[in-house]
Length: 174
Length: 125
Image (tube, rainbow over all chains, first blue to last red; front, side):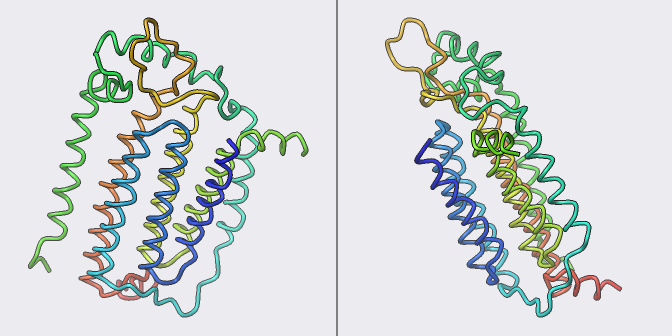
């Protein structure tokens, strides 16, 4: 818990850097470091599988996608005079933030072992998965055995995204 | 007011989620550059996933990999695995949709020669 606070501050600072930096290539690299900080926080929370996926797919693949796009387009953010911020954003977003923070009291305390999320259904998976599937890693057991159709159809989503990319980037299409 | 502050102090993850979420939405709404808007979108998506994963943490719990040789599994020493499963799927889908939107941005640049929203609206007129 104590080591988490500096990591959370690092997370907010890297997100701020990715947003505030003018040069788009620097912003993309800072976004990659934001992903790595996020993966560190998740590893600290005990979510190692999510941390692996974020470090490989989020920090690696997303950065490569951004860089490929920037190499094909322009890396300069050519805004000379910034337009005034609309009033709806100035009023609406702090209001949304206040509402969210006001609702925080109804959430379980961070790390509470008796929260509804950790007491109702997840003990069933933890107790029975090694007997029913033989896999020590519960995340793998749920992903590949209990929810295998979900994972299968997710690959269809990724396939569709790949086809869409290939169709959009087709050469000779003016 | 002090009570609300105490409430928030016990939930640092939720405060970080709110900051990242609002920041991402703000930059999506205000910034005219399309790549910058996608950076904001990425921050919004990761903040929502972060919010889900933060629910899975338990005090004194470890990684959800069952220790060998245990006769009966004690659920209180492992983190909740279900948010991890759902978010692993969500991260991969997030990057796939990000790839499609970046391809669209590059197609827009090929056709109009700009990534700036205001210039784009001028050229579309």
